[in-house]
Image (cartoon, rainbow, N blue to C red; front, side):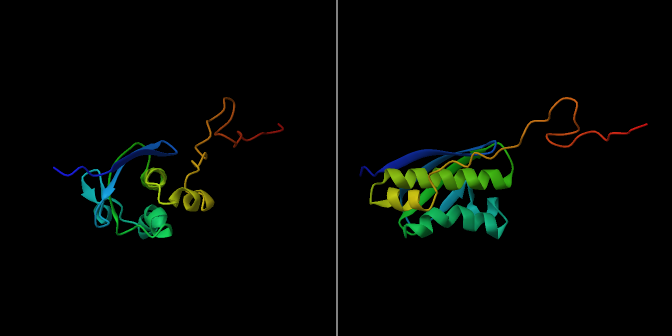
Length: 131
């Protein structure tokens, strides 16, 4: 049996968590046991996920198998991109500096702001009446 390098990484965005496994292959991406095109239907999300692979010119050298939980489609795509970037950084190949320069290794801290008491939402207030 031939031992091959497998890189594990975790990506996060909003409420989503992606567990990513990166291994040598032909460039296939599988999300929750489905092909990428079947799981993510929006083209913008597919492009977002492929960004780190395209930037490092490694899209045809690695296969990605990912498990994504929580959040919505946009958050899951962001988490997957973050996870793929972190896994690529582990491969060496001088990819970490390229990914860092393009901002793929930085976790996006934006999340939903909590609703405050005495207000209608996070920022919106109840209508004020003078009389």
